[in-house]
Length: 425
Image (cartoon, rainbow, N blue to C red; front, side):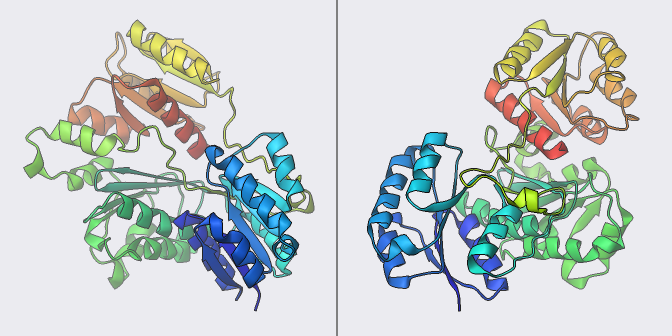
């Protein structure tokens, strides 16, 4: 039986690899301490070693490990693949010199990754290449999972490990899951993948069906859930207010609007990337797409010059957001009224919109109503001081993806913009 050595301290990365290898009856050995890698490679003599390069600060140490591997006559003969953060070309060149066959930049394009593993092990791996973006973020004991574009079984597999990691690291005793499928058109042909998604969520013993909420506009989803006894207790809804209200524990706060805004709409992980780190090609694998340069795969999810519209009557707030966006490399266009913005939205393509609720003239909510009919509506972020529950719920019902309270640090706003553009691609 073929054997692969996985050197990684990331539970998500190594557990996903183990499962994929096991599907093809390839055994795997996991090592979390890089200091033992030379001894392990020399004694085990695996058919392949997959090494995770943790972070940029770890580069010198990682290079030192590779140097020791090269100096060992047994270990140096073993093919190696590495994965980690984006590094300078000079560093990548040194990795190749030390015997790395291919370096994959995170988030990893796993269909190309396993195409290369297939070549080394001479074992075919079939990957689901369905276009899919999955975003996961937490607020206290509520974990939001939003899926766009499609249901990809590789991402769904990773979700199980991501949820386990969040629950474990944050010591959540009773996790609540909000599964947001509003960007998906689902029917009976998706039944097996929906079941696979729910089964992976419920695989964690800490997650109970009564604490799983699904937001979807497709009647089939509710029919599927209602027709399976193992999903008894899962609530499905088409109205965001129904989901939000079911999560509110009135015993913990006398002000429901504050509770919704503070405990549900604002992520505890603000400023971090909640996207599960796996990307799959939107098109089927071709010979050209598989033959990438041996040192790096470019999987940048964002275009720096994405165009953002900022609609805000408060000039201080408008300037603050505009400067932050431009400093982050985005093209920003500002509007002081909803009316001015509506004159441009029909002829200008924006990658995201940031809008206030309370403005002079037409309100933010009325502006959202006017753009409901747009065929290719960009993701919308509400950035407002308003915390009234009816405004929050109405904004989300009208299609806003995020509701952020003023004021926020620039990096929080930039991260939200980045995440939403990634989800919409």
